[in-house]
Length: 287
Image (cartoon, rainbow, N blue to C red; front, side, top):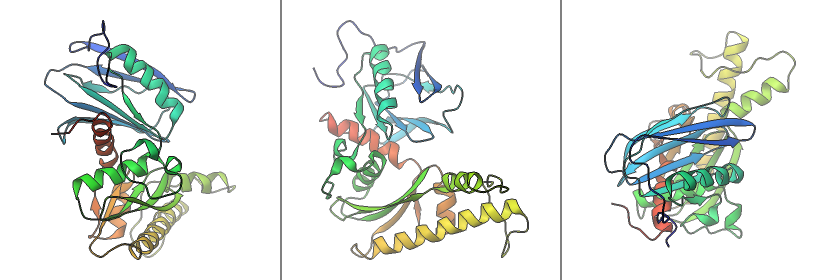
């Protein structure tokens, strides 16, 4: 039986709703999968450090998607269900991934394909310990290498952490850099000082901030953009000419706007990697 073959006696819920409940840390996340008809192929679920997102793919096209900003309280996702043949889960939280995997398998009869470290992603990782590479970093590299075969890239993923990674022209993951992301930097500044508030998610116009809020929010964003640019340039120095600069992640829009017009913003790159990785892991070929 293949990893995604439906178990005997189990049926996929093509109609109605299936209520999935699983615990992420101490919080309860509820995912509601509802049928609306149509032939869907792959459900990709990305569990990050502070967010969970999902997308349904028909071939390479996203037919529906959603995102949970945090795991606080109860979130519900109304997901077009249809005839899903493959489920892929990419997660930087292996415990959460295992719990979700068990629930998905018990309700749908499909065994999801899980990727919780770089060694489980079908891409060459030219490092001594591929399993130590974060899943999201490897998935981004996989998605880019399938989008643009033969062209390398610097991939900046702006989430809880900011990662800046190198992908060769041959589609190999070479390594990269890891730094705190925008929200993590804001929380660290607020908790590490007596009077500074948590920074807002905006950057004021003008040469400087005119109050504490604008000074902290702008200072963090501009500092991070400058650091991202410096790390990007350092990675570019080790790659061949004519490579792309790609930005993804929950704060990708903010980072890309501060890096310049040459940046390619691909907000769903990790989800693409999950869908591709799931198909390649089971030996299938996407449409």
